[in-house]
Length: 296
Image 1 (cartoon, rainbow, N blue to C red):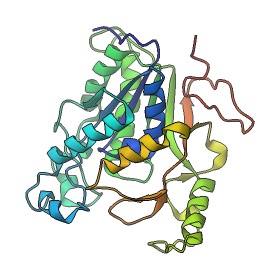
Image 2: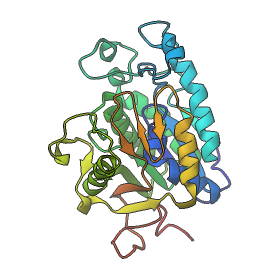
Image 3: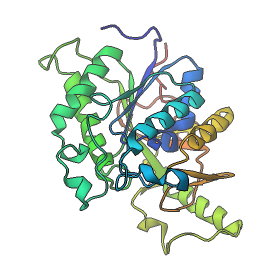
Image 4: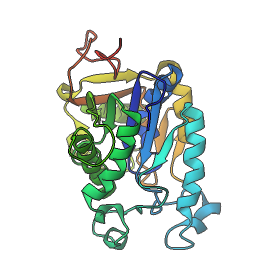
């Protein structure tokens, strides 16, 4: 196995199709355009997702259970919009099934990602790490952003794979230590601005929010280390979001999932560096490049 020709290599690990665009779409488009080898590993087909398109409602898990293959076509279209040509499924397509939410029947299925042995699942990712030798890994935090079982499991698998890939005593292939690991993050201030913008446009928040702190996926602004501005890649991100009509409804600068929670399309994608050294920073004290300090 040999690493790709590009000297810079970025690996992202996500739970379901569409998670990558919401969190990292502009970053992926930027680095792909710059010639960085961008690889997305998706852990499940997203079979348990709710279907927003009425004509495709028959694909849902409680009907034909054919949403997974359809979402494979959506992610392919999304990757084209972002200019990314290396998207893989952890262990192969359908190896791990979407687990649904905690406490539901799908979560108890033996083939669900939540039920997978972490080391066994991580072994598939170790192979990819040792093949590609990425300098930068992007993953979820320890609660998976908002507590979805598959997101939590994706975090565990990504972090375990990074550990095992660097261990010379583990498995086959050349050991590889990843230089920088980032977790996706959404600053509290950004969510507040998003809700304020919804209100200013006369849009009602689709749920009662007394305090932004009640949302599980916000983090203190002080924890943010890195911000990637969408800039010229915002259009690519929007196009990639629109490639998921079964899961995402877009409206100008807002999007919503099946829960109808309106969110601004992030024009800055934020990250927390959890392994490695911070590189050059701007006036806000943030890196503006995931490869800061690693470029030749």
